[in-house]
Image (cartoon, rainbow, N blue to C red):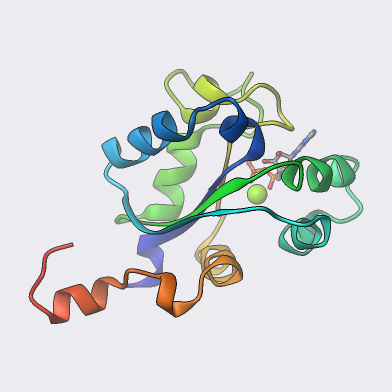
Length: 152
Ligand code: IDP
Ligand code: MG
């Protein structure tokens, strides 16, 4: 499976705190994404700063680091054709006020900062972000299942 069929997502601390994990996972699976890896993680401020390094210097950076290290997150690798773009569509705009009806951010975000979920913005980001969180042993690899004659 080519890398363009993979994306990385997190359910952010606010949505975990508000008991939306199951609802969000259902929306993701109902939209045709297969969960290839998943776990609960608590990021330290330095983990969050490293993950979001591209935003260093922006006005919201410190708030983002503080929020993302404020409680546990759910990290996951998702598989689907055209995963990066299709997942960005499923989650909607960064600001829930701008997000389309029915999108995950429209349904579960409480503000632009506390916007329920993360989705990779490119195949390169999906690779980097998946590797940031998951080792090979934590990853249900589609190639292995296919080699063994299983459908995934
Ligand atoms: P994205 O998550 O939709 O890709 P980015 O621009 O990459 O949006 O920003 C990363 C995260 O930083 C957002 O998901 C959001 O949590 C936070 N963020 C972005 N812009 C703002 C802002 O203007 N105010 C507060 N938080 C923001
Ligand atoms: Mg982004």
